[in-house]
Image 1: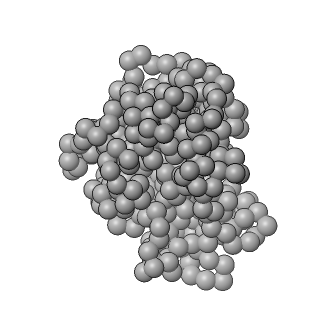
Image 2: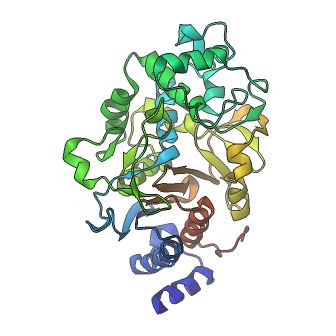
Image 3: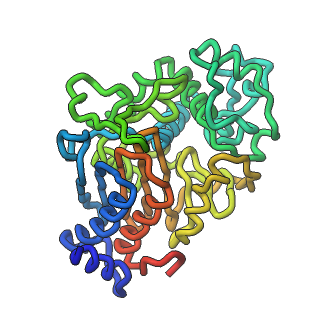
Length: 388
């Protein structure tokens, strides 16, 4: 407890900490002080945390991956829920960079069964940014296969004109990923596991965990303490199906921070996902990624991940032209399944970032607050609620 208290004092202390000159022991105390109280308060069995500063990566592991079983370690695989959407967005942007599609194309171009429907006339960009006109968070229970999915989309009627409102939606970005895969002529899962993940240098990231890695796949834990894993569903792979380690997820973050080691098409794809297309309050919506001017006010980020933004339709202010990726932005995404909670946040201009993967779905606000403590330390800012 004394160590945690000392680290908490460090969090609020003055003095700049250049990202390139992080002391590993101090960082350990900072991360412990941010993570351990949250785990205790919300009975989180295990967490894996990766931090980057100045191009270096630091990995931290806490608790257990399976009750009564092995501890969380570098090989532990977590469900990352909606953080998966950032990979789906990258695949769509990669398809565009390779000339298979344009984000301005309508959905029916790649799924002719949608011709004549509202969804069919919707652009891929509006699907990928939840701006199709009010598609719901989840499919209705009766949508259980691809045929019923197509019927649902054909019969769905928008509440708003496309591009005017944001309503966070698994069916929306799920269809975006499904159509991107169709444009490339291969199944979505195959493209992710055989093309995109390897191109990004990810060796422990999967849609379907292979037999050889099942021992590393953590169990998630529901509120009643029961062990759970993600429930299969239509477009689940596209919307919330990725399993990965914190270290591999950090490799993806590092590719976004500095893509110079990647081929040109993949570099352009990553930049496209971090392009801002509209604003909701202080939040700038990219393809899956959500962004804020840095230094960001913590309360602005909390507002951008609030129930009002997640569960309701919100009018948007279109950015014309779209806001090209630039420095001084906090880029982030939350994700949850019934038994897992993830948060990823990074600031490319400062070369800092954090990945937090847990095998319990604990409150998003607690993830943001913990991450801000670490990011503010890395950036040499006071760890307050607002701008320093």
